[in-house]
Amino acid sequence: MVAIRLGRLGEEPIEGPFDLNRLLETHRRIFGGVYEWAGQLRRDTGTMIKQRESGYAVAYGDSTNVPTALADIFAKLEREAYLTGLALGLFAFRAAYYYGEIDAIHPFREGNSRTLRQFFVDLARAAGYKLDWTSASSTEEQRGQIFMARDFAVLRGDSSRLARIIEENLRPL
Image 1 (cartoon, rainbow, N blue to C red):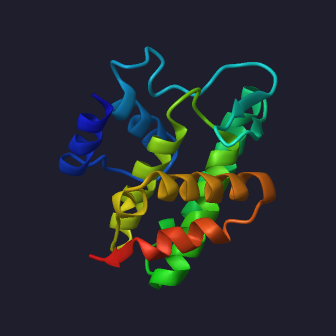
Image 2 (cartoon, rainbow, N blue to C red):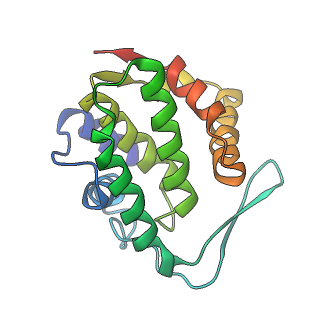
């Protein structure tokens, strides 16, 4: 069901600015009918810990901070004109930064990775690029590299690995 919904987003893209509403709508369109809370920010209390298959854990902050943190990130993204007009390498670098920042906030209970990948496919398209995650995730090893690069950005604040993956899978439209 999720794969079908992701395919539909390619055919019927979400319109409007790249802000919180668009992120919520992306999640809702992907996971509506799967989760009753699709398109809603997580509402847990305390720190959320995600155990990775490789054995390490990633901790995400209390959900009460999510709306304010996202507002700050989306204000910065808007000030950067949603990354339009950037050369390919610079777009990849800045997109990786924002991907890592939003992922560190971890806005949803489940489905953050798929939502963010789609959100950044749409952001790239609006900036004149095609971002194709499928070519970066065709093997288990490649998927592991994406997750490790994402977690490296979240845990260490270093999005260079993620930027490299994005740049390798980014083409002008």
